[in-house]
Structures are given as C-alpha cells and as structure tokens.
Image (tube, rainbow over all chains, first blue to last red; front, side, top):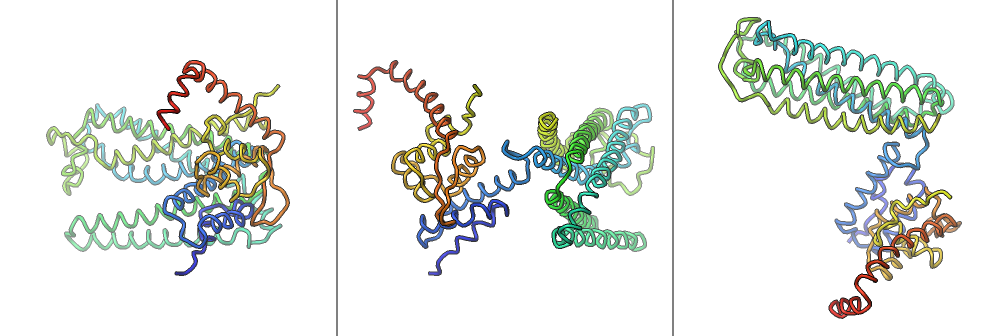
Length: 321
Length: 116
C-alpha cells in the first residue's frame, strides 16, 4: 500500500495557517496514524477546522484579528451578500416583469412602489459597489507598484476568464434568442433549460469575480481612512439590502393578495397576453411558487449574514475610533 | 482587575482547557499533547480540533511556541495562560463543590460504587 501523503490535508487551510502550523500538523498526522490512512471522522474534522480557519483568515469571525482585517473581511462578506442579491434580484425582476398585465389599475399602487423600491435599491447597490471599488484603487496601485503584477495575477486572470465566459455566453444567448423569433414554435422546456444554464454560468462568473476581488482586497494594505470608508459603504449597503428585501416581500404580498392568478404558470406563459388583456383567470393557490420561496430564502440568509457583519463593522469602527 | 476571558475554558472537555491542563505539567509538542490528554482525560482530540485550539490559545497569548524543530515544535504555558487556567479551575470547582456538598460524601461513594 502506498504511504498516504498527509500534506494533502493542508489544502483545507489558508496559506498563512499552513506556513505557521503546516509542518507540525503533518508531523502530528504522521505520528498519530503511522502510515495508515486518516480515518473519515478525523478527515471530516480537518475539513471543518480548515474551513473555519479560512473564514477566520477572511476576517469574518474571531476577535483576534486586527480591526482593519475584521472590517475589510466583513465588508467583503457584505459584498458577497450583495452578489447574492444581484443574482436573485435578477431572477426576481425577470419573474415579476409584466405583473401589471394581470393587476387592476386601482390595485397597482403598492406593488408598483415595492417594485420601484427594488429597482432603486439595485441602482444604489451598483453605485455603492462602484464607490467601494474606487476607494481601493490607490491601494491596489501601490500593491502592484511594490510587488508587481505577480501579486494579483492569479485572481485577475480568474476574473478575466469569468468575465469573458459571461460576456461570450450572454452574446450567444442573445443571438440564439433572436433566432427563435424567426423560427416559429419551439418547445418550451429546452428553451428554459438553455436559459437556466446561461444564468447559472453568469451567476458563477459573478461569484468568481467577487471572490477574486476579495482575494485581492485582502492582499492590499488599506489605510485607516479607506478601511473606514469601506466600513461605511458596507453599512450603507445593508440599508440597500433591507430595502430590496422589503420591496420583494411587499410586492409578493400585494400581488398574492390582489392578483394571485399572476402566479399561475398558464397566465404567465400565455403567448397571447398583453397589458390589460387578462382580468380574471380564476382563483389559484399558487401564491407561494418555489422560485419565489428560493429567492426569498437566499435573500434572507444573505441579509442576515450582511446584518451580522454590519454589527461587527460598527463595533470595530467604534473600537478603532 | 480585568476579568479573565474564559471562552473555551468553561467545560472540562473543552479542548483549550485540556491543552492548558496538559501544558501545566510541562512543555509539549502536538503529538505529546494529544497523548497526554488521552491519558489523563480519556479524550481523543482530532488533529483539526487540537490545532484549532492551539492556534486560538497562541493568538490569545495563553500559550507560546518554543524554539525547536518545526515538525515537533513544543508549546508552553504563559503567565496569562496560567492565570486563565487557574480562573477556569475556580469556576469549575465552584460547581463541583456545590455538587459534592449536595450529594454528600456517601452519595459520591455510592455513585462511584455503582459505576464501578
């Protein structure tokens, strides 16, 4: 039997931890298991411990990390929450479009305000993300000048590839969708599958770009003022996330109360539907479609994570003065 | 006087408390710690749990690494670590004293007899 390579267990841990404890950790495995495989239970424990160290290294948990690291880590977690909102919000926008078609004009005020709030929130989120990116540019330039492109090449390459894949697939889907109009009737499910695949690809690309931005930001030495700015922007983003989440829930509740037939797939996919053409299709129990439940839960979990980190940022900002 | 941070030191089977207790008997490296804890507490700490606790204790300044072979680096208790261990033992003793007085010496002997 080949002797197991205990070094492979280090891959679960962040680089800094590996540099500090790696050798003695491997030595412990070597002495404990004496050439045998690490049992599954112990392996799972290592995976869990490594994941915790990574989260700690990110600055999201742990009191031992510096204020600068904690604020930056929490701000990046808020950024990831925003990315989840971008993805789920896009699905929501696509799902909810044309809601006016099935809602009487005198019942549109509340859902319209809620829908607009989501749109305004999305716009503000983009502005805040842009401002955060601008805030770290000087520090990024300093890093590249002092350590060269080598320091950021890997995450930038990942971002570039993800961006190109997203752009190419988006271009492809536009051309493909355009060709459908001239092609006559096309089966519904294959279309949806292609759309879902494209969407999954773009969602993954967005996450890759955000994670790469996080990797680069953690390598950058931020000045105290920039850290405070990032903290303040992350707090503002929390307000935006609350507004968007409240908007989605309000829209959902208002449509469920006044136009529950909107959630009926027959109405939504009717090829003949036009604004005002649908008045009453009949009562339906589909006021809680799976898609909206998934969107709502994903937003809720992200929002809770963002709020937790907002509280952490506030504490650290106060401590840092 | 500042109150000692006892997080991870409140239960007798908390890995940080077990490590501090082990190091109170002298400096040890990871494997020696693991074996000593198994011997005196009957608890087998997984490598992940052991080094997670070591990292936190070192971060809090309760233990420190000594110079030596990077593969078998020994650790020892710091003054802060000794104080934290003493404070944790006082907390634990408060509970065990109450339990002992309520159960009575005969009660403890009886339970021990049943267990034996």
